[in-house]
Length: 97
Image 1 (tube, one colour):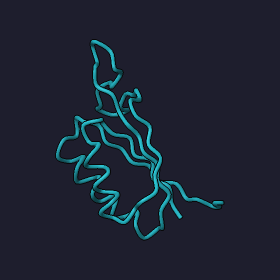
Image 2 (spheres, helix red, strand yellow):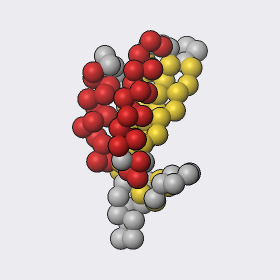
Image 3 (cartoon, one colour):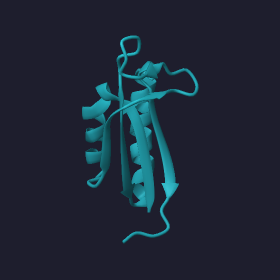
Image 4 (tube, one colour):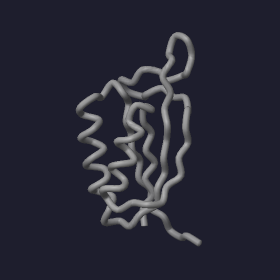
């Protein structure tokens, strides 16, 4: 099993949900209206007057064979609009209850 943490501009909400659904991923936990700043070229998403946009994040635990499909589609979205700031991080899950 793997966990994928996806952080993204709120504008991507529907697309992220569609990517997970199309790859057969049903379970997830989502955080809305979170703040952040990209570590490479991203602009701040702070919900302030100067930087009004915010991010969302979603984490999902899935079978290993679903990970590459999800990552591939996320990378395609990010390439279309890199200024929106879409990132995904994968961890191995050792145990679950």
